Image (tube, rainbow, N blue to C red; front, side, top):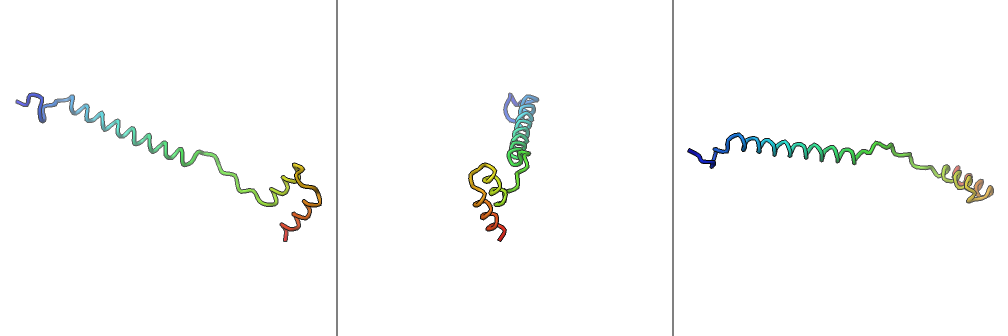
Length: 78
């Protein structure tokens, strides 16, 4: 007679142990999903802006005048 000790836990012990394994598996899967979603957030990264594009934008915004723009454009072409 086991009287609740040793292997005498019956179905409650096995169910509880199985439940813990399910909880552990769910937590591991959730952690993996979280890591992969953080690693690739789905947004494609924009290509880096070239020096010519930056110069064009500065000229378009009026930060530099036509003479300076033309000079810098020639410098970039060289």
